[in-house]
Length: 268
Image (cartoon, rainbow, N blue to C red; front, side, top):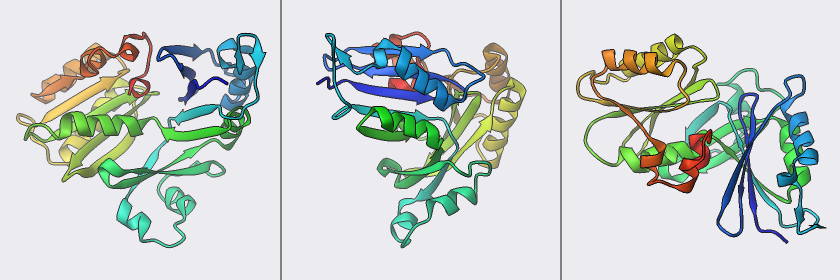
């Protein structure tokens, strides 16, 4: 039986797969999604057609027992303090999430502890998509794509230096903006980043809302930015200390950081 771990990333109309092999190597496979089909239907087709997803080793086929997968989804997240979650009997994740995020009814709500930030994350996942994964793997972990990014930014940047820091992660035509304070998340929200002008407005709006200093505080940006050169230029025109996070240098030349087209959240 293979002990490989399959990471399935379900983005905004995108699918990709990272196969972490038992021998320590990794294989990244972007999948060409058919737009006329749902993401769940695309995933089911991928399991049927793609050899790297079939449960086969040296010509032998095994059942799903023991197979492990991580499903990473790009969906809005609601963060609550861990104490509020732990001290609320019969905590209703559906009610909490739906009271903040609209348009996600009928999707399964997942709660994940983020102990580094003393918080609990609630996010949604398409029920059909999750069912397809569970049909093919005995052990399935579900995670939001922003969770490993939060952990990395917190441990790598927040805990060093005295300047206040704002982080902007671009992915799936959105920008996740966050700030940490007193070893917790002070601010975390996702904004549409289809257009560079909108992304610029949202980042500067949050900067002002949090009362950050244009000359002294830091903005860290990473990811797939729209109209990258223009946006970096405009951010630099308003803020004195704008830093690009280079995944290759940031992750000490990790083999995953060398793979072209790999989302930053999959490198972590």
